[in-house]
Image 1 (cartoon, rainbow, N blue to C red):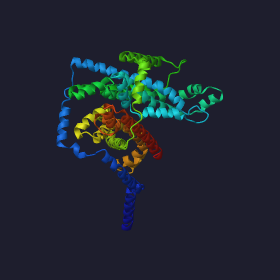
Image 2: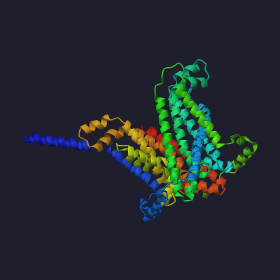
Image 3: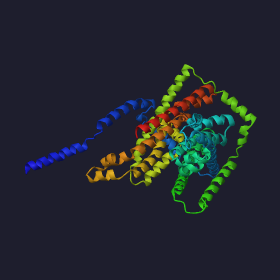
Image 4: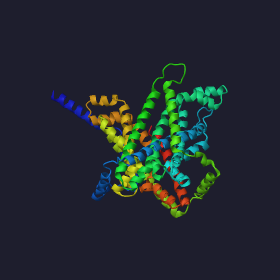
Length: 531
C-alpha cells in the first residue's frame, strides 16, 4: 500500500515537472537574448532614461504646465474661433480624402495585378504610390505652405498626396486578394479590363474598400490637426498658437473638442462598417433609401467643405503658380551629398529608427496592460484619451518632462500608440479561441498560465500584425516629431527649411523616403516569417 502511494506521488511529481517545462523554452530564451542584443543600442539611440521621468525638477515643470490647463477656456470669443477651426478641420479632412481618392483610383488600377491574364504589376505606378505615401503628410504640408502660404490649401494638398499613396496601395492589395475567377472569365469573353474589374471584382471587394476609405477619413481628421502645426489651418494651427502662448486653458478646450471629434468620427466609422456588414433587403434596385441618404450626406459634406475652405485650386494650374512651384522645387536639387552632411543625416536616421522602435515597444507593453482587464469601460476611456491626443501635442508635453531630444519623441509615440494598440489588442484577445484556455483552467492551471499558453498563442498572429503595422506608421511620425524638438530627421528638416537650405533639406527628405521603404519591406518580411 505504501509503495503504491509512493509511486503515485512520484507520478504526480513527474507530471508536475513535465507540465512546468516549456518545450520551446530554449528557443524562447535564445530569442530573448538576441532581441536584447539588437534592442539595447536602439534604446541607447533613443536616449532612454527612466530617471529623467522621476527627476524632481522635471516633475515640477510638467506639473505646473498641466495645472495651467485647468479650467478650460470657455469665453464666447474663443468659442467662436474654436467652432470655426473645428469646421475647418473637418473640411480639410474631407477635401483631402476626396483628392486622395481621385489619385488612388487610377493609380491602384494601373498598379494592381487584379483582372489581368498574367499577374503582372506596373512598377511605375507602384513607385509613384511608394513615393507619395513614403513622405509624411506634415512634410508635404510644410513644402506647400512655403509655396502657397498659410491656410487650408496646403493641408488639403498634403493629405491628398500622402493618403492617395496609402489608398492606392491598399486598394490594389484588396482587389488582388479577392477571387478573380469571374473577372478572368469576363476577360476571356472579350470584355475590357476596366469592365472586368467593375463587374467581376468590385462587387466582391466593395465592403472592404468602403470600410478602409471610411477608416482613412477618420485618420485624416487626426492628420489635419497635426498639419495645423506648420500653418495648414484648423484646430492644429489654433493649438500651436495656444501652446506657444503658454495658454493652457485654450489648449485644454481645443484638446477636449478634438477628443470629441475623434470619438464621433470613430462612432460614425463603426456605424458605417456595421451597415456594410448587414445583409441587404431584397429589392429590385441596389439603391435603397439608406444608400441614397448616405450618398446625399456625402455630397452635402463635400460641397459644404469646398465652400467653407474657399480654396481656389484652379490657381494651382496658372502659369504664375507653375513658375513658383518650379522655382521652389529646383532649389532642392541637386541634394547636398557632402560627407559632413551625410553623416549628420545618418545620425538622424538612426535616431528616427530608435524613436520608432522604442516608442512602439513601450506602446505594445502599455497597450497589452490596458487591454487585459475584463471590465472595459474605464480602460476604454483611457485608451480613447491616449489616442485622441496627436503625437505632436504629446511630444510638446513629454519634452517638458524629459527635455528636448529623441527620448521625448519615443515617449510621445508610446503614449499615442498605446491608445491605438490597446484597443486593437483588446479586440484581438476577445476574438481569440476560448477552448484552449478553458481546457487548461479545467486541468487546474492558474489563470495567468491559461492566458499565456491558451489565449495568447491564438491571438499572437493578430497582435504581431497590429504591432508591425503601427511600427510602419510610427516610422513616418518619428520622422516629423523633431518639428517640436524631439530629435531625428524631422529636427534636421525643420531647421534646414527654416534657414532656406533646400539642398540639405532634399537629402533629409530622400532619407525619410528610403527609411520608410526599408521599414515597409522589413515589416512585410517579419509578418511572413512569423506566420
